[in-house]
Image (cartoon, rainbow, N blue to C red):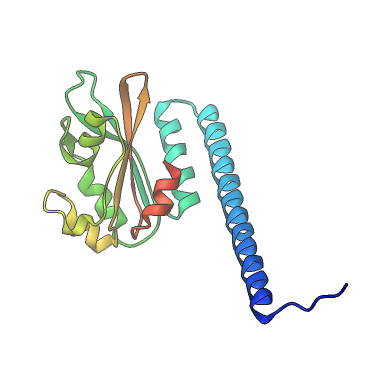
Length: 184
């Protein structure tokens, strides 16, 4: 028995097919993102494993993450031996104008627990971010950041049990929080 479907039934079937196709497309995008994250993790672990010392390991982490995300600048802040301040350790940055000046301004900085974004990540043991550092009156390098085209700052603590061993800080050129959030 061959029944003809009404226009409304055909449109409903078409809408259902579109929903299924959209779901498949979203699943494929999620799978691709998961594969990219897995590859980044694998490459980072290999680079850390091959590093000669802690600074080289941190530099490898910065380089791998910034390269994979197109972020332009990354730095590591580590507690001084007395545990009272964070000092900058390795730094990686791309070739964009102004990044060298921004790095030079960062060299002498130190952060106490809770001070600046690195200090806040250090004391809270949680990732923190500033959407636009050029508009943040507490960001000491706002002018240099603006000249380098940097807008967003993300700080991620490196933890071992309950101790913060270091704080990784990244600066993408623009804020893409969903992309940033999926990596942390």
